[in-house]
Length: 362
Image 1 (cartoon, rainbow, N blue to C red):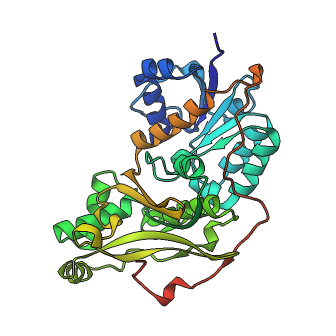
Image 2 (image 1 turned 30 degrees about the vertical axis):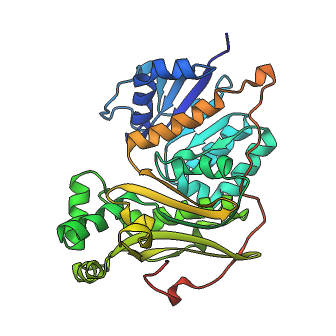
């Protein structure tokens, strides 16, 4: 019988609790589908006393992330701390110690992804991050595996569920921006401090990751031109609706020519006309995400679905763990290198100032 895949989790907040709950709820299904049982050994969190939807044996709970990273018996470290530090350092230490890492941390990947993926390659382990972009939408693996034979030239997407909910609520309910934001907070779709969402920071991290993988350049968060949605008024929404147009926060990355990339996040006018004349992303409402990936020979592919929250994120984390459960280094069945990665030292030229054409991507 194959040995279990031994896991350590760092970060036991809302998302971490969702992962633990999903591991329990789907235990029979996971055992039946995975060649190796997913065995959670450690959970690290700085606030072990806080109330959660799922309880955990205190013997497996620690306040010290080094207990997880330093456990030589673990196969995989799951990083759900968020933020840049100490998450980046802990991920690097885990990789250097020969452990696979599964993370949902788009901020770390958008600023340090190239270096961390290089460490993983040198140590012959994998850094997986399906949960970092699109929540439960399988866009990362779809891009890196299913679409790896294509020359990708354009990615366009709604990558932040909070903004999409706010703009959808403004359009449907004739609410002001402030009213829609308050409603999103009351429903738990927006944090108390929603700056990262409404100013485009979250979406900028995500489009930087996707563009890096698709185009083969080290594209970082700072390369992304951003505009927030706070200046959009109900009058803007009403005028757009009269012309069968919707306003969405869209991320766009285009490979225009060799070494030249245009990349932005901003409010965008999309045609909402029925049939083929309408833009596919115009129909992505509420907290859902949608991503269109275009290239040759495939043409264009649309990925859409729930983009945030503990359940969609847990689905993505578990999919990465199941992928790793196929391999066993002790039996000389190492996880193969990825088809697509973020190369170190290959920086693009950022071009085509998006401010020249406000509120319009296509």
